[in-house]
Image (tube, rainbow, N blue to C red; front, side):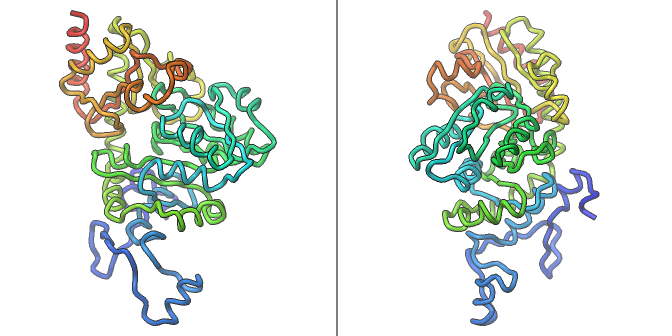
Length: 394
């Protein structure tokens, strides 16, 4: 029955477990461990002969509900909830590589994602190549005989580049490599990488899934076979498990995800159009606009635009700081996907560890800002930017 439910219904009812008390809201099973009826029952549980929970690091009823609900939404067979988005990214990549393997990744990545690939993985003898992911030819030319993993974000952080996921997956399948997609900016409502041929999807649930600035979380979603063969032992023995309380909070967030993302996206579209028409912005990048450089790919693989807008001010860092400081409704933060509108200066925060040259190759300058639209009234956001731009120009 759940297979026929539409996303909004899955996000309210999917994966729900109820205790004998019949609670309406999902219960929080805030426990570290579990007890057994007998010594024999404990032995059978550890042998895998009987189903049940063993230890909260391996799984718990609340985490199980969150994982199942995300699987229903994403169209995945299995998922593992992690303590944060970066725990999910690191697990999805590192669980399947060894010394001598090669990771091929898009160069446009969140700063911590690049650190995992450029700094952490090589410490263990894993090679990497970063390519301009917008051109499939670059992916093809980057393949080596030892390439095991393709990794990408789409849209990318912070400049909202879009990568042809189906095209990348086709190349990976030719060599038996695994495609891992960080789908945070698109949300599972606007893009489903598994349907496009990707093998693994990761989310920072801290962002839209919580969406109200309350807790950290991440999740890795894939086939049952990949989870069991590649991820499960890593997950079980390295301990990146999510807190049951956070899982419960994220379950509550999922219930309102479609409502929030719809409003956020409508707001982002209106603000993007205002900024583009203001005459005071050097460049506006928004996946919902016809002038987006990859508009043809967006039409093919995304069901909607984005809650995020990237734009560049003509006056560089000084102008960007002045605009941020002049905003009254929109708050300065390095987070995104929140009910509150948040603005970020990537060059001095999320991507500060990149060199000026590396940022330039990503189309990011001192004047680049990333706006995550919230659920406020769109006109209030437009008026806030109008007054801030006027203050900067004065």
